[in-house]
Image (cartoon, rainbow, N blue to C red; front, top):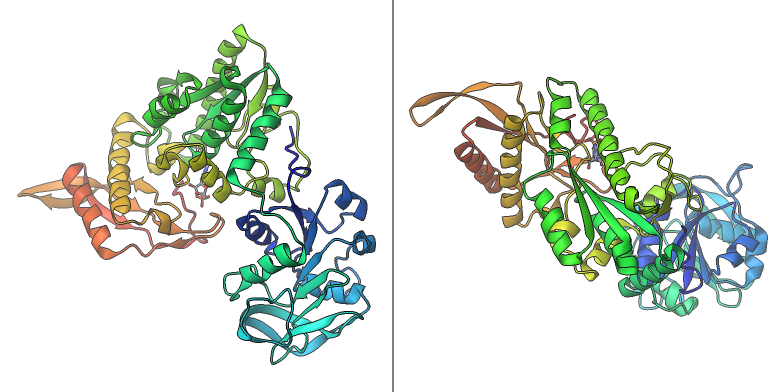
Length: 521
Ligand code: XMP
């Protein structure tokens, strides 16, 4: 099921020329409450019409517009009469396609660059005469196309921005989407609101309303199931679907006993009492724990958990489908996953599924993916709008295999209990210190296979260490270790060693990723 937002909103297409920043541009547009979508540079004028685009942004890109294999664009797009805004490579491409000239500079411009306005323009309205922009280029526009005027320059670049109101073509050499560019969002806003006259109609309530209407009309009176993990994506997806079809939705929660303190309860009690959704809880703790007995090797743990997960999910669906024919499965797929996997137009039959633990191919459900066009921050905003508790909406990422991969050693009741208690203390103290928004997550890892000597009261102890792994990150692909204030670390260390007698040492992991991964297993 593909959500079609095109007819109902202003639509901005971000044409990706191989930029690092295409997603960032799309997000910046959405921050202005305007719907945006990333499309490849092979898109044709006809396809753009079909998407009912109201404006287009050309992204940056790594190539030089004159290289033989450089990414180009269907020239007929310029004949559509849509406003186009070019950024960096996109700016140079507009210049080249409109018969201006682009040449290599003697000196490249990288980083923050003083930029000066040279004339009044719609694009740079409300921007001061001189300010800093973030540049990353060696080629420059050296000759304006006809009917264009230059509106900014830098020391190295005579034409750093231009506009042609008549042709509705606009562009800047710098990257307004990155935070290092001053007034970047003002420039983007000027393009979208003043140059392109778009309406700011992409709001949380409109997203919810439309998703609900679309699900209602597609699903009709068919039955739907949804796996809940405790995380924000599945909770928001389930809540939207529930709004649309009520009791026709059954949620499945697999309690594998590997969640953190209060998380299972949060799903079983809080989420259900709030939403009144039908919930089927599968208590699979014994099966998970008995299969994990004696297993130390991380990959083996993960495989066992994956297999047990599938078994439990199959059991749940079998029970549910005994009574009704279930036709749809809800997935919490997000827009970055869609873009990164090639952007396709929506699969119908499930193949592999990461959110619910790699479900097998023969589970032939049709998919409902209500978050498929949304970024994570939008999902969170919608979660709040739907009235979900902050604990769910702002939950830090937590791995599917749960605490099992935060125990270096065997997964058993005793070890789970220790890591769960330590994790709760860390989360409590980080929340009191207002650190939740400043870090990506903080795995707490029990070194169950390691013991060291300590002293507590007058007695010798021989306990386990726990490791704190606080990290900052944008997307978990890379990460930095987070500089947690010493007083918070001190409090955590004191509480953990006082409240959990089996733990007598607290260690801080100061490895970035790479080389270290965020999780220890
Ligand atoms: P690593 O350890 O690979 O983790 O640096 C990157 C991010 O992914 C999370 N993570 C997982 N999430 N299932 C998940 O849903 C998994 O098996 C899994 N393993 C790691 C991790 O918490 C971090 O945010």
